[in-house]
Amino acid sequence: MFALTPRLTLRPGWFEDAPALAQAIGHEAVVNHLARAPWPYTPADAETFLSLPRGATEPRFVIVERSGDHRLIGGIGLHRAENGDHELGYWLTPNAWGRGYATEAGRAVLAIARHALPLTRLTAYHHADNPASGAVLRKLGFVETGRSQRWSLARGATVAAVDFALDLNAAAAPFAGTMPIAA
Image (cartoon, rainbow, N blue to C red; front, side, top):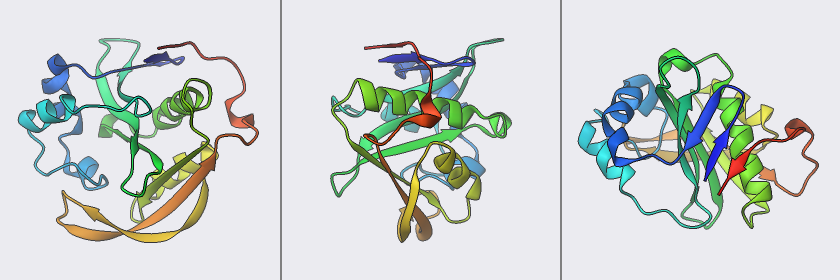
């Protein structure tokens, strides 16, 4: 699957993306807010990630700016959590923060989940010390469901987290308009 937004291309990551992926994610400030990314993050980690299999309901995208040099600026996708939920996860490289890219990419993935996948509910969480991620989830329509403790590989510790859920069958007001997607 691919998705185009006004400023971004969401596409599958390719093995050839490993150097750009390692450069974009390879910031302690990024991986400290992720569950499964190691620190330091190496090109070999990027190659391993890009070679992971995906299920039919687990789209995983790199986020690429459509203007300029079309640089890889982040990642977003759905994966099956240990409890069976479909979970939204995303990250952006630091110099892409604060531009609305996470919300824009999130809207595209939610449109795919609603219209191209047989999903009715998504979950997500953010580390409690990353309130900007919580703001993105709220903009996307997620509702806080509680607090938990989550493992962070980069930190090598359990961290406080804020849990969210989204009913995909609910009114999709924040997602009005059409968006080109291709499967």
